[in-house]
Each structure stands twice: as C-alpha cells, then as structure tokens.
Length: 101
Image 1 (cartoon, one colour):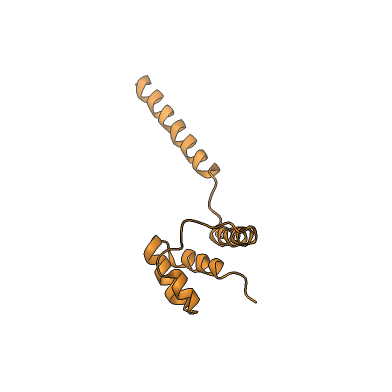
Image 2 (cartoon, rainbow, N blue to C red):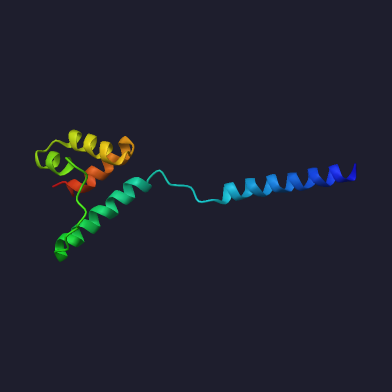
C-alpha cells in the first residue's frame, strides 16, 4: 500500500509542476503581430534609406496588387503564399504599404 501512496504523491507533484511551468511560460501578446508588422515596416524604411536590396522578393502577386492599389487582392495573395491568418496577412500587407500619408 505504501508504494501506491508514494506513486500517487509523485504523480501529483509532477502534475503540479507541469501546471506551474505552463502558467509561467511566456504567452504571445495579442498585439505581437501588429508590433512585428510595424518593426518590419521600419526596417524596410531603414533598408530603403541605406540602399540595401532584399534578395528575397514579396510573395507572388502581392507587389503587383499593391502597385495597382488592390489591397484586398494583395492580402489574398499574401495569405495564399504564406498560409497565415487574415489578421496577420492584413497587418503584413499594411506594413508593406508603408505609412499612410
């Protein structure tokens, strides 16, 4: 009987430790995608100012749609190419468009 009690006690301790570790783990903030898009936009401004060319192009069709002012089609193309959700794609395309004037 003592072996069963020791086993249950150890299992209880393991479960509590796992729960504490889960609660202590960093969570992704709701604003993270928007903040990331803003960082990417600012980085692009710096790269443009310095004349640095990114060898990796935008996903197919996004640049063309943005050049024609077709934001919704650009978002659709971005989602199709990357597989991200609508909110992330919208924020990424908005960052690619740059600041509103």
